[in-house]
Amino acid sequence: MIDNHNREINYLRISITDRCNLRCVYCMPKDGVSFLGHEDILSYEEILRIVDAAVKTGIIKIRVTGGEPLVRRGITDFLSSLKKVEGLRDISLTTNGILLEDYAEEIFDAGIKRINVSLDSLSPDRYRDITRGGDISRVIRGISKAHDTGFSPIKINVVAIKGFNDNEIIDFAKLTIDKPYQIRFIEFMPVGNSAMENSMGYLSNDEVLKGINSFSPLEPVVPTRRDRTDGPACLYTMKDAMGKIGFISAMSHEFCSSCNRLRLTADGHLRACLLSDEPTVDLKTPLRNGCSNSELGALIENLISRKPGSHKINQQQAHRRKCVTNMSSIGG
Ligand code: SAM
Ligand code: SF4
Image 1 (cartoon, rainbow, N blue to C red):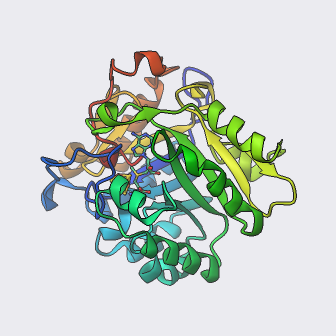
Image 2 (spheres, protein in one colour):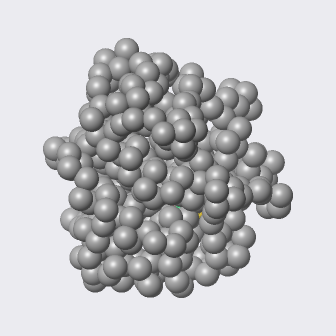
């Protein structure tokens, strides 16, 4: 469906759980996170009904995320069912990689070939600090296993933070020299009530790009058809490198005019904008009250028609949060 700002809305991100086996400082507060109960989260059957209805409104692409999607039991069967939904052209997964070594083959066999793994530091100690306890060796083994299993592309998400991992930017870029990975630098976004504001600094992707350019000049990648439908990353490559480097600059270079996404939270709310809690629509209640697929479709279309043209937040206004929901509930 085309929205009121002439954007084709064809991409749905689904958070299948708000739970996570890590506690990244920019995503969750240290303590006091209350997670949804079993009854409150959508069952896989309910998610599949929403997907069926969403496909009829024009959704062709899905990303499964969380919280950490691999901690939810039954994910592989769910992915297999998703794969069978007619009309979907692309299904992918975002994970923190902690359980990836165990799940890579199952997920691949379920038909998912594209995966994003979050990794914000290459130093074991720093990784442990930012994730509040994570073991980087598991993530590294998970990425290798995904590579050996045949996932392609493998994208590695890095939230670049001043004074924390900015001295590792070149090391991340170097990973693309002999591996076909796409390293994607993501600007910190003011979402939810993480500890980030008080302890660390926002870093614009212009600064990240400048840093890499001073090491090795970056050449823009002419987007393939797939890259074009792939989202907001601006892609570059270092000379003779196998992989690519992407920049997702939601704060410094707003890309709302090409935003094609909706987001389904684990508790069944469909959101029109990542950075704003409004507008949303509750799909769980009507689903549980027995609504039909066409009624579901009408609710989705109504939300699309209310999707805002822009989030209108820049870094200077970041304190005026329009989104108090944590990223772990929305799915990124
Ligand atoms: N747990 C999985 C993971 O970490 O990949 C999937 C969910 S996580 C919410 C999805 C993405 O959102 C991750 O790449 C994470 O780094 C990013 N993220 C979380 N909070 C963020 C924030 N405040 N600003 C920018 N990116 C954020
Ligand atoms: Fe968990 Fe992902 Fe949030 Fe980190 S970014 S706390 S891994 S949901």
